[in-house]
Length: 70
Image 1 (cartoon, rainbow, N blue to C red):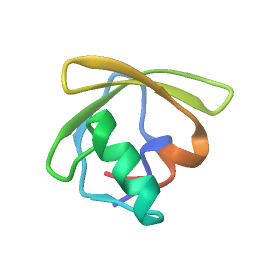
Image 2 (tube, helix red, strand yellow):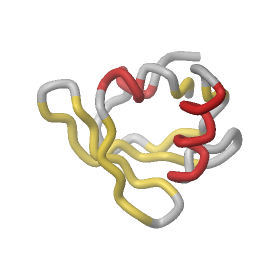
Image 3 (cartoon, rainbow, N blue to C red):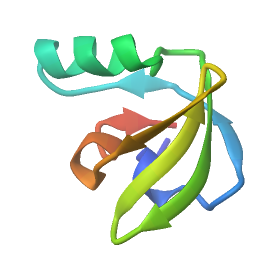
């Protein structure tokens, strides 16, 4: 298990755990980052990620990506 921020571009993986405070977890779950869901890193610029999750593209910062374990 490793943070989403360490994934290679173009690699699809399954979310194993979403960490952080309750409000952070709820925010990420509302964006589609749920345990068992698939996520693909589209690009990485300066530590910030653009990912495909639930058939939509979402931009998240490194700090949020570190809370998503894959």
